Length: 110
Image (cartoon, rainbow, N blue to C red):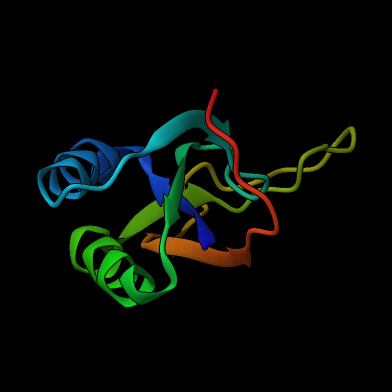
């Protein structure tokens, strides 16, 4: 048995959940936030048999997409007398999914 932990963009979470449930997989979710952009994510926990891992990973990859987002690249603190251009943004890639597949040594449902 395996535990699949996937961290996905909140915009991809609802369609992904619907797809996983439609395909017969049980999923538990938790709202989380990333450290870099501090944007809201959703972490999904799915317990599956070993032969189901590839199918679940494929469903996650098919439903989670990367996108570009403009972020401010100003330093967090400004020194007195420093002048910054207000439109100092850059594009970064966000979204997609981070997927961990973990071995389960014991499973109990009570």
